[in-house]
Length: 177
Image (tube, rainbow, N blue to C red; front, top):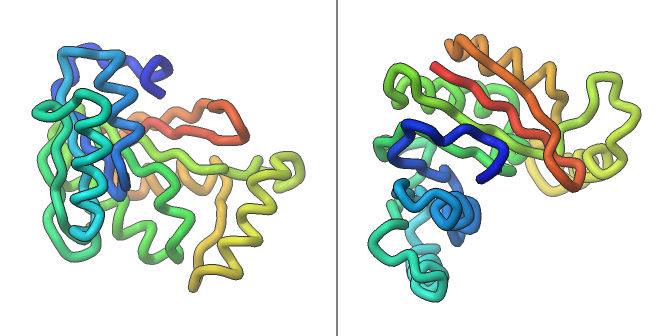
């Protein structure tokens, strides 16, 4: 994703539910002019700080403790939701996408990635198996198709939506306000 997305003109990326910060760390290492943050539940903070220090990103990659369902999102011109939407039911997914849209500035981008299933639900075996696992482990969670994600993002208000396959059975959908 650090190489796949055009980061030109972007200043600050926030990974929503980003755990240790591996995604923004990769982006920041490839783009030294950017800063980043992770918005995650507060107990993750100390482990995040250790990860950031070992990767030499203290001061460029920060932690914001909070709950993306109830707290305001930190300011950014790019948000990332990686392996987030598959945890939640349709109503919660739509809520999170709309919340990200509302928080982004004009021209801001939301990057959603998951093991999205092909629209015919026949070819991404990894995504299909992961979907079954999400159905067992969560209340309402599952993988979803690229068409589903594209539709939800457009319904949230995003004007430009583009999907691209990543490595390992993952797909990223780039949605710009």
